[in-house]
Image (cartoon, rainbow, N blue to C red; front, top):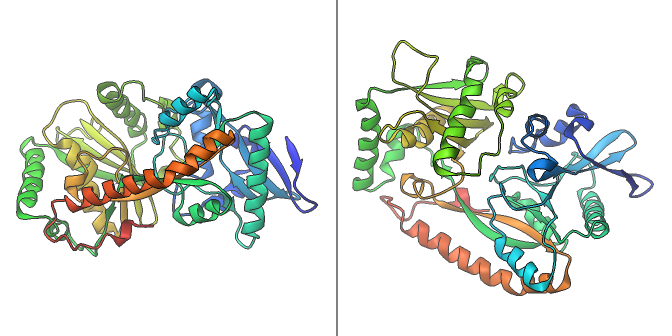
Length: 400
């Protein structure tokens, strides 16, 4: 579907990443800090069957062209539910029901199943960002109105882009993640020094538990990752979902298999072995991605229960490796219960929302500041209770 935005630009809504040239898309996406807006990742979600209309994620990507040149784009999805978003908007759905408004379908901008900050419109360097943003917002409003959508939501947004979109009338809703920052650490012992004595002993005890179980950890990156480990990532991921997160297994085996070889340069695996001789059968593994100085923990699992292996594979070994590699930021993934006490402060992130029903829009605008104030108080309370040696530790690395 092509829409003429002006004599200079044309807009096209596309239902497959494969309809967009990879090189053209990545010229916009690769300069960003996040790896999760790159063509290979988004296309893999679709071609693996993880993202599709039947799973409740109908791709509906907005692209802006000057002649045949892609100058701007936004990965977008029509959603018939709120699963896999990690921003829990069920209260807004309940409000819509009480008002007699159909909350679904809605238009969503995020990387599916990926609660990682960085979503934004992709705009080519040197282009007029203000003009293109205005054109894209207008196209989204028109699309939602024509298709009678309840609203448009952007989740885990880039902090600077949030300010731009607020100026276009989107309401900002505050949440928090748990993010590790490299406070000029040179060694793992430097990381331990930020904790109080009791928590330092606890972390050392947890690491010793893995050693006592006679487990060894191996780190694989890029081309050195054995091909046969990719389908095993799904095995571990599936096992964890079955044990702890029933109904949240969103990614197919094919998705992990297709990471090889074209996305291998981003992958980092932390594998645990119980047999010194057998390197083909890890008993546990965590799956991370790296881009430049950022590390992202995504999934993990184990085939047997080992005391503290989760902490070693998902926190301590990645932190140790991150320090050695000069990584500055480590986002370990969703959840926070175990992360707080291991050096991951509560870190603000935002979602952006626009409702098209005037009653819902009025209620959102009336209460969102109060909601955000309460969330900010929660963030501050969490961080005041962290088991650090010095409460004056600078958390500026995790503020927007």
